[in-house]
Image 1: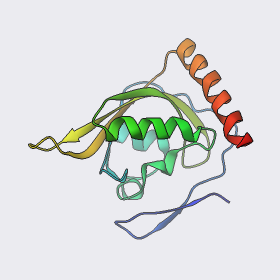
Image 2: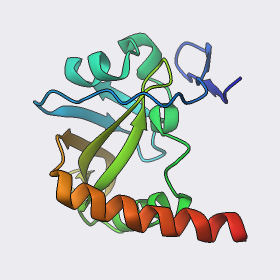
Image 3: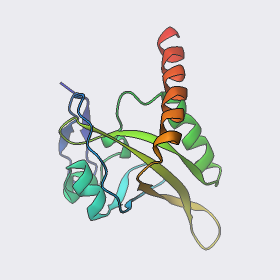
Image 4: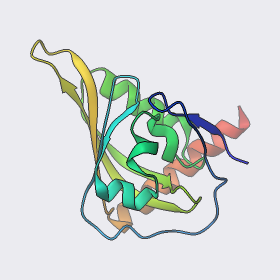
Length: 152
């Protein structure tokens, strides 16, 4: 069985599924989420909820890692967080997982949300359909990263 995720608002525990090798095609539009500075989801638009299969109640208050696929290298997320925590914009390809264990690929952009004094108060992320050639290049890099992680 998968990892347990605790929703800090509802207190409910959500069990992430084990991944299954079925790809769900993202049909377009833009999936939007917002998080606090700790990566806890504060908003998820309908497109994101429909694509992931999680309800608004399950998502808001849960860590954004709720839909992270285990095939994603830790180094990719380390770079992402280092970039956005320093106040910069990040864009890249991500393999995510639905509530039933299927996967999908997106290009993601993330930028900090700032208060009037310029302090980071959260993050906003958008996802769209990736270009397949660029996606394949990113997947090749991720495969190398994962091989390196398993050797460590």
